[in-house]
Image (cartoon, rainbow, N blue to C red):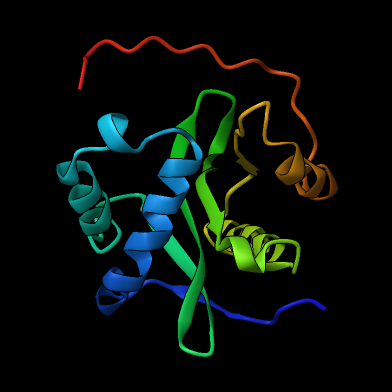
Length: 156
């Protein structure tokens, strides 16, 4: 049976419930223990959500007063469109709520915010091993066929 959480923007008082979700997201992608993000990155990320000059946004899924999911996204310019583009950077739901529609609702909430902002396209990446999530993503968007390359220029 699908959950019907409230999807809303984060507020400053959400930090204590947002943080375990954020840590869970990072652990899922191997950023824990010795490879965990420095606290400075977490604190800066959190602060950016409340800075009106930052193009970074955060929403959460809440059920019975408990945060059960998060989504972070940002708007940026593109060389192939006059209107801005939206990058859905982070999506995570509590393991106990997976498969109940929370991720879908968070993605759809980003779509709605993007439409309100006049955005032409929303895109995101996932790891090739994230087959469970890809089943959902294949229902909500088209695979672009692009492969992501990256080079770290600064060591943490």
